[in-house]
Image (cartoon, rainbow, N blue to C red; front, side, top):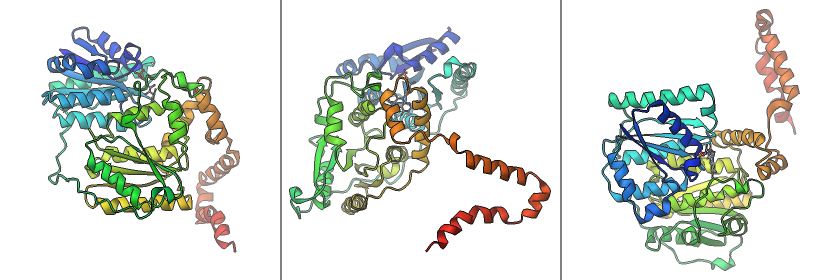
Length: 448
Ligand SMILES: Cc1cc2nc3c(=O)[nH]c(=O)nc-3n(C[C@H](O)[C@H](O)[C@H](O)COP(=O)(O)O)c2cc1C
């Protein structure tokens, strides 16, 4: 069987993920594996997409093999997906799956992104394998990889695949936005909010959303259109920035990010939904922020979004936007869309963002934020020798919140555990445990 591997890692043959593919290849010498290094050939594929078209057409099974990069697939794979869908190639009914390596930080949203796009093309999508980057070096990881391929072959033989989603009958059309006259000149307003957008010249809808926001928002705003930034290329995953935070590219994006964007009091992102995400150009911008490593450098800064498109149908994108804000310690003031009543939606987001800025509103993190940061904390602790800038930041900001030093709480728990394991004492306790747990709260509530 012809198996096409679309290697989305910018590291090409040095991809860790690809090593699992090689492992599977070794296990099945009867099958013909072809690897296309799409993550390394973006510019060539933009010029001539024919090699990719020929390969996907010939294949019986397609495997997307890639690293998880900042919540989704790397920019390079986003761009490949854009080119693939734009080519109009008919892949209906073709089997497809995916294999990633990562530290499991938002691997779920990356997998969903690939699944949603493959299902747009009506491909038969088989659930993929999300491995830790070190898994293949363990017996357990090898077994899981082997069983994954077995499952894929079984699925193909029995025509078992993920059901195509039922398309919503109500296709929401974006509604026009009214841009009111500027009540107060931008220059007279206080503050500094940066609107980061990927906005094409022809995209008047998004331009109007931005214009309305700027006019109704009572603070000074400026626009950075990342479409115009002279990026040399996408993040290469080279880790050159790990020690000093300096990117290997000479396009000075790291300096631009630090001097023009991170200095603002808040960031508003504005984009039109493309391929179930913010689009390849935004992904390029996101990946290149790896020069900040895993440091929550915009912590405390509220975020807002202006989104054109069917946002209410994009569950995965909703999770990405919320999780990004959560992990970064940013209050998500709102996501304004042009689906139902764009004017009202924009005005409300502007009001909430202004409130957050005026009152310095920083609510606690939820599961998305706390869970994500625990993965980062453990990762940076282990990698402290190499991720020097991250390690310094985590130490300085108390982000190594390992629970080991809470000796008093642990002792208390041993004591309670000892008491409740004795049935006689437990029976006598009655409601004492609940009462005991509420004691500190009672004290607080009785305070004058
Ligand atoms: C720019 C960049 C972003 C990353 N983002 C994530 C992430 O969001 N979640 C995660 O678990 N790992 C993340 N990683 C780690 C990679 O997924 C991991 O190192 C992977 O195994 C690399 O695979 P490759 O060698 O095939 O490219 C990131 C690495 C880089 C360089």
